[in-house]
Length: 454
Image (cartoon, rainbow, N blue to C red; front, side):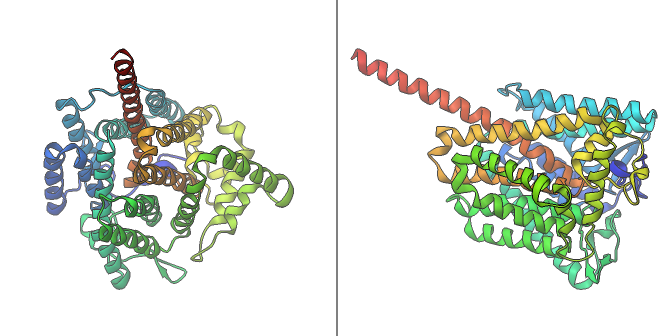
């Protein structure tokens, strides 16, 4: 893997290293900057959502070889807002925050040593900074369930015009976002099926984006504060977008989301469910399957033309060549096998970029996020509200969908924002419910003490 493949493939596009500004894109960016500075906290994430959904990654400003895509520019202004309004106030520095910083630094350090070029350092420095800014901005801006609902509402609202654009693209084979650059005017076809992408950096990224948002949209149906018509419309829009991408991975994400939703009645027995799942996978791997358990990926071919065999082969080679990449990653995966220069697995990509250390830190982030979600679900604040319980469960389902997607794709472009979102939201809401539970206990103790002394 060189700097023009794998994790940097989006940067290898024709617009990398070149300032690209369209009047429409620039006007939209300025409007979103104004919005992120002025909107109430519960809606402050909306501009980032809209930039990700409606502006192609080609729109950027290049200063002294450093690329500033519109999302990065917006995040800088969001950071200015958070600092100027002191919205970091009250945040506790937790284990997941330390792991986030360690992950970003490990990626930067190992990748730079591995590539040994200034270009690699600049690229990975930008990526690591984006990671940390995005995470800590979400930490600061989504502090309560009201904030979480406000953020979710932004995705629901955005899904409607995105779905309209995808429907137009599917019916005409013309991508309206092509005027901004970075996406083709004529939509590509595979196996006779159109693969719509809108403003997203790739068809798969578009589908995976909305397959992870779908659980949050469905959860709104159970929230008395959410409008049912908007919830139904948004869920339908998510499904329309996913179907028009004609990609198996996003559709499998929907199926895994349904599986996650069906486990809701067993939420208090998840430890037993996890053990049952582990035992099942071990039995499949060592007893029932003729190949490794990940060979099941090769059997997925919903739309036709899927590359499940490629993904299975990638995992096979990563396991077989563990000694090559575990310490410093590797500069090239092309010799692993035909087509394996493209690392279509997020976990393996972490290892390729930063070795076993970075892969381990990334996995730890997921584990800590589920731990935080479990802590929230056990809180009295949440157990007393079924709609809040379902909302938090839907966030866990979204993380589960991401994990399943990670086995088949590596994220790049706008969707990377969704990697850090659940990590940050789960951490902040865990702090919130813990503080509320503590206040409730102290209040109850005070009332009991007062009653006893009266």
